[in-house]
Image 1 (cartoon, rainbow, N blue to C red):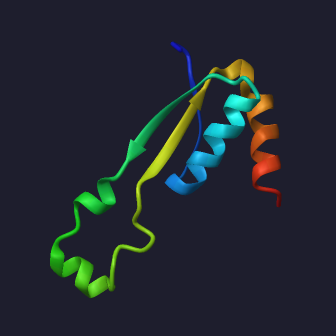
Image 2: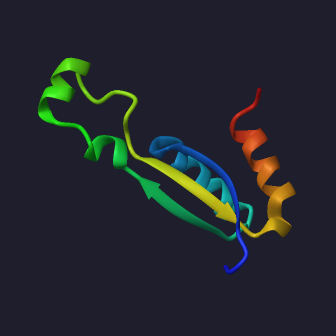
Length: 81
């Protein structure tokens, strides 16, 4: 995909659900993983924080702009407000 649009960044656990839903809907996507928050931690940071909760790997999704409406429908189904 050459022309893509960022549609969101999610925790990896939600990313797995999104991947399944996008594939079921026939929507092509690209992903980018970000684990920089955990990479920057030192052992003392982990101790002071009491662990790494909330700093897990994030996954960003990009889709062709022509699929924007379909992606929004997928997100609304997965994450109703």
